[in-house]
Length: 251
Length: 184
Image: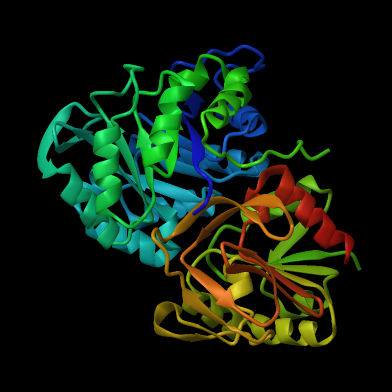
C-alpha cells in the first residue's frame, strides 16, 4: 500500500484562488501557482484544483493555469470542474495535469469515465461524488439525485475510474470531522483508492479519515494557515499515521 | 553534444518532465526524430498513456529503431513508468503488446487490493519516497529496486528504468533526475 496522502484543494474561478485562503506570507494572494508551490514546499502530497465557475469561456483560462502550475510544481495535481468530454480531459492533461476529476458529467453519461480511462489510463480519472442522505448530489451539493452513493461508486470503479473523491455534503465546511461511516462503506465497495473529503477541523480528524481512506482532502484547515501545513503533517504522524518522509527542497 | 531529448510518442505528459529537467538547468527538446534520439547526450522515455498506442507511435516514427540502436551503442536512456515498461519484451496491457525488448522481462497487471497504485512509497533499498501511479508492473532479471516486493527499477547497461515519476516526486525526484543526468 502506498503511504496515506494529504491533499489540499484549491477552489479557483477565472484563474484565481477564490475562497477561504489566509494569505500570510504570500506575495500575490490569489495566485494559484504561488499557493500551489507554497503547499508543495510545505509537504502536500498532491493538489486538487477545482474550477468552481467552469463556464465554457473559462476553458482557455483553466488550460493556461494548468500549464503554469505544471511548469513550477513537482508533485502530482488533479483538475476538476468543467470536464465534460474526452476533449476537455485531453486539453487539461496535455497542459500538464496528472489527472482530471469528473462529477456531474459522469453521472449524466457514465461512458465518459471509460472513454477518458481508455485514452489516458485509469490513474488519470478521478470520479468525484458529492454525497448526502445516501444519494449523489449535483450542482455543488445543492440538488439531490435518485442515484444511490455506494452503487454509483461501484459503477464508476467498474467503468474505469482510478480513484473516488468522496465528499460528504453534510460534513463539508462544518469542521467536525469526516463522514467516516460513509467513507468506509464506499471504500469497502470498490477496489480502487478513495479520497475522503469534507469536514476536516483538526489533525485528529484527518488522521481518523486516513485510517479508513487512502487520502484526505483538506481545504479551510490549511487555507487559514498555509504555513501550518508542516505542523499539521507532524501532528497527523504523531497520531500514528505514517506520511511520506519529506526531503529538503532541492537547492 | 549535450542535448537532452524527451521522446514524444503522441500521448501523455511530457511537459512535467521538461519542467523538471529545466529546474535542473538542462533544457530539453520533445521529439520523435530518430537521429536526434540516437545522438542526444541523454534520452528520457516518459510514461503516460497506453502501451499499444505508444509502441505503434514509436514504431511508425522510427523512434523505436533509434532507441534500440542507442541502447546498443551504450548511450544512456531513462525510462519512466510506461517508458520503462516499453523497454521490456512484452506487456499484458491492451491484450498483449510487443515491447522494445531492450531488457529481459515482461509487464503484468498488478494484483493487489487496490489498483491503480496511487501515491508515495519508499523505494528499497534506496530509502527515498517517490510518487507512483500505475496498474501494471515489470518482472525482470534486471530488477534493482522494489516496493512491497514489486519491481520498481531496472538497470541494464546504460538503460535505467523506474516505475515512479521522478518529475512528480518533489525534491527527492529532482535529486534522482540530477544524478541520472550527471552520468550522461
